[in-house]
Length: 619
Image 1: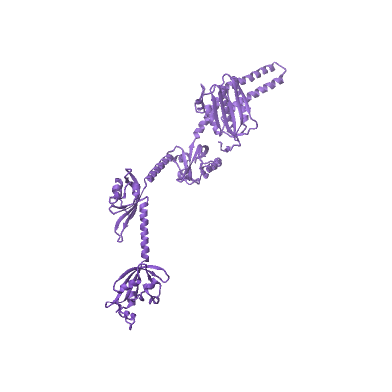
Image 2: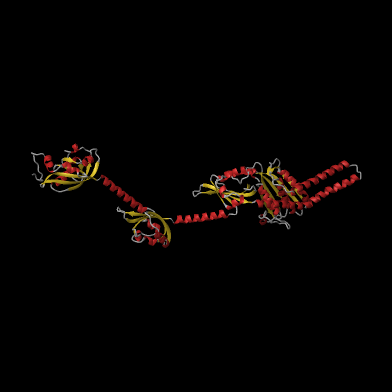
């Protein structure tokens, strides 16, 4: 026996002695970890299958190899570990195992002595691969670190509670969200911070394994309840026992406020659409009807079921004559253009034609993108009829007011006709000359009467290309008789080669007769009226009428065109209102300037045929 108590017999091999006492292969294969047996010098004698698999070496290669070749450590000496084991001490140590391909594996080793009658015959080394466990440990540590990072920095409140609602953990986000320190909440009942009504509702609800609920939570600093949306999840242990609740909550007060406002807005919009006195149709971005209101059904006769899904371009309420206009309006609506007060025609299901005032407005989604448009149609059929009656009434009024002047104008030629007739009866010889004068006077009478009849006769509105210079001259001819009565001279300055304009000639005559008659009546002591006609810019013609009458103060000028507003003692104020309306129908505009004691200037701007405005859109 040597100093360490290790027996060495020279006459019998060590392996023979070892195997005489230990059936090595059978013993080693029973262990689930890698095991190898070695002599007292650390030379491997036998290994199990797990050791072969772990190291990558064959069994024959491992047998006879020194354990120092596969186990290394900066902390432990393998020789010292083997010797201490041979002295009877079980050794535990971590080593790096070098596999056949050079891959280092971290192993937890246990060195046990192989004793025969208290004599160490060799050493067992049991090695457990720790690489996967260390990797898993690191992964778990990283998960824990990330969880702590999220928990400590998340804007949402993260909490753990017992099944009976006692808070065991709450994240620091509670400081900003509700004004509490985490220590104030931990150990308290979570529901004590909820609104009582919400607590009652929550208690009546059976909590699922994972659930989402919204309730009000008391804010410490703001002294008010805030709406919170909380996701609650039950946590079970490995035995399936319900142990705690994980809660993740966020402040949704502003969202709920916005949702309430949106609901209120939607309800208001619903009430507006359903209760509006005009017909309303809603279109998607492709021009398909998504909704109509009850007034639309009543006005046109088609039901909601018949209209929804129809495209604007094949709308049954659009007359054939309006198809061109509708295509243009369709393009403008799809581009997001706002249209206001376009006069047009529509047809009902039973074939009646309606005058309508059309307005469209774009509809946008929450991102501001175009999503469709709404169309509002106001039935103005009765209004148009009333306007026609008013227009005809004003025509008759003008004709009546002109009668005195016309009677005076006609009396003069009639006197001449009567005198020449008597001379001819007396046998005067200058018959040819008398006949020529009489014919001229008769033509004068015929001209005045025809103009008066055209003005008074009801006529359908008809737009044609007309020479406005000719219209102005005809009006001056008609009004001259009244001007003479007042001692007024009418001077015309007309620019040559003016373009024609699309208009209703009779209506424009009525407008200019109105203006000239007003100018004459404002000059009871006589004077001069200047009528100028010329181009204005690229697209308009300008008619300017300047008188030397009494004029008006500025506050009265602003009211011109209002119904029943007049500065005349027996006037109705309807004449200028009708004139203004006619000018607007012709897509024109009117401007009045006046100075008290100096006179009044009326300017009328009318688009001509070269205008960018499409005159085909005129009624």
